[in-house]
Length: 227
Image 1: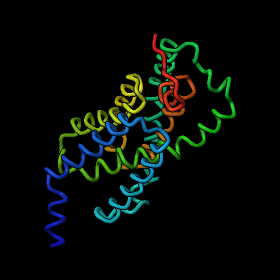
Image 2: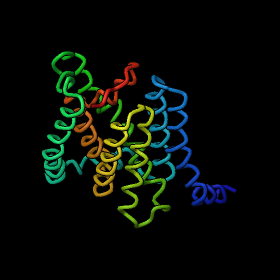
Image 3: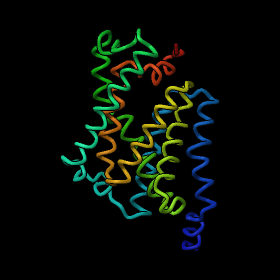
Image 4: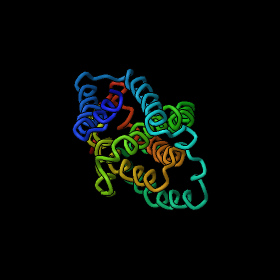
């Protein structure tokens, strides 16, 4: 009985249905319902359930999944070199789209900016990486198989899609591109710690240069303006 349930649970049809409901259906419901504050609670509840699954079904402990050993000089060098290129590009995009908000957050609301810099990696980047990288690659590995780049692109697309709840295309596009990059980092290193650090680096930078307006403006009831 239990073995049959496990087989059914790992059936490709069931996996496709689960991925659709989780990564497409749930964001659409959130977008349609206009949910805001419950999003963080939902994200954290899902991330906890995902870690429980990874431990019980895959036999992977949190320490193994965290894999701090991958946070080494070589991997950090790759991430920082990539950021040295993409960081200024993001700043330029911010200046072109919303020049009035360029570095306005740290200048005008310094205490709030400091709080975001400290809490975003823990409260947002970390649970997102559990759900969209750890769980995705553990749970759906049998569906995507060895087609690496297709898997990375699909992961980026669903990560971008969840940001439809923010109701602007800038957040969706940036998140999709970032999703592919984060997926590649996780795929290469299998380190939740490293990919969380990378996600936090870009997330904090986006808030700093002004693009965070597209990610938090809606949450406060303001519509971002593009030029």
